[in-house]
Length: 239
Image (cartoon, rainbow, N blue to C red; front, side, top):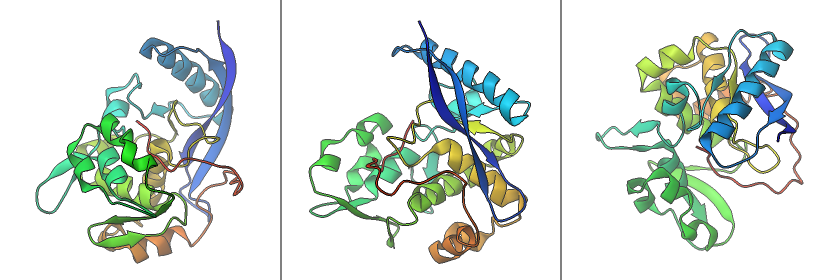
């Protein structure tokens, strides 16, 4: 049994004001929790995307990916390297940076497994999310995906062997990402990385400084994806 579903496929824009194109692709969805079912859905999504968008290959970035590169680039697996030599997954870094009305950030989340950090009950027990804070710097919730994207871009840039392979692709997907329920997307962040790289905007200042990064992504439309401000969504990473 299978159904029809729609998921976004992201392609980097290397010129003009738009940084990332978002293509909504219909495909055959294979329900079920088994990894093989997700991979059937991925294959269907990619086949339809290649016909619709005209790209020769799509990289699935998730723990369900058929490609080892896509698995390595999942937020659950992509490691952040700090100046002091520590390492933890991007997912753990993102969750540990959340500050709520009545608590946080919970820095001990960095030491957990990615899935445990994402599901930690404290993330639902301390009121509304108010900001992110990391390395002594606060990030507002607007632009909505700016902090997550910056975190992902920095993590990827510090893995040159992975970044080099990413730059060979012109289309990215994440089968678990549903824009009706979530905001942040690792596939989108990868497409943004490719776009900024080809525009020669990935300077050390942009990678290091929040204001420099925000200035770059605010010069034009980040994506053509429709944003519904009334939609109730979760600010969480996906793996």
